[in-house]
Length: 326
Image 1 (cartoon, rainbow, N blue to C red):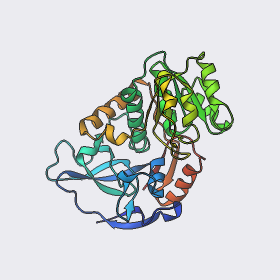
Image 2: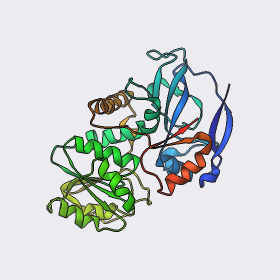
Image 3: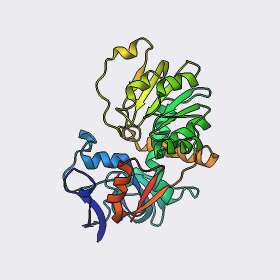
Image 4: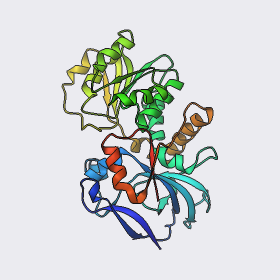
């Protein structure tokens, strides 16, 4: 059986993405075959395409990008239990940019009727990331102030909306004036332009000089060090993305006077155990069912148009979550 896929044979810009036909074997004993209807598009895909995703992401060429998707089970491996043909599922597993694929059953999540395949394809990775950032790495408490960088982006929107529902005062930053209203509409009480404003002094002003309990930073180099000045004593700055470049080395003494912490986490470790994956997904879907969180799809791109999709995302011309449609 053949299926369409997007491969790269070297690292580089969007021009290295190539549509090809690849063989799809029957599922292994512990796998299922998923016919995909929606494939996630994330900035992590760009890191991987560039070759800047770190040593954990090293793989032999040709390489199929992408980390998650959603669709319908078409076939089940001989030793798989609890999953069935025709079931609506999503998954987190490398190699998502293809129309149909085999996935280890341990990386699947069953979709409830309230979560469509399109929404899961766009938002599962972001939703699970928001879950561990808000509920596990730093558990948000009512009354806390938090700072969310890139608050109009797909990830920032989820963090802001969910943090607000948990009782936090949410301060957001964006990279251009036209994104400010989007950030406000998704839960931010205060919004600043990190390219034009002194967001550190404005954050302190918004919190009465106290500072925020936590900074959620997907921007990296351009904002991370000033973000330390936004923290209250014993606060934590979490850098989970580097859209503007890696955070450069800095003097740890900057943390000492207020006993600050910094962290560079990855979702991969928080869902490595299949039980943690299921618990994180259940927490995410519960938040949606309660109305605390609204998962939306902002843009749709044909899988064949993946180069244009990468160019738009990499150029900062997007807001919200997108999917690739095979």
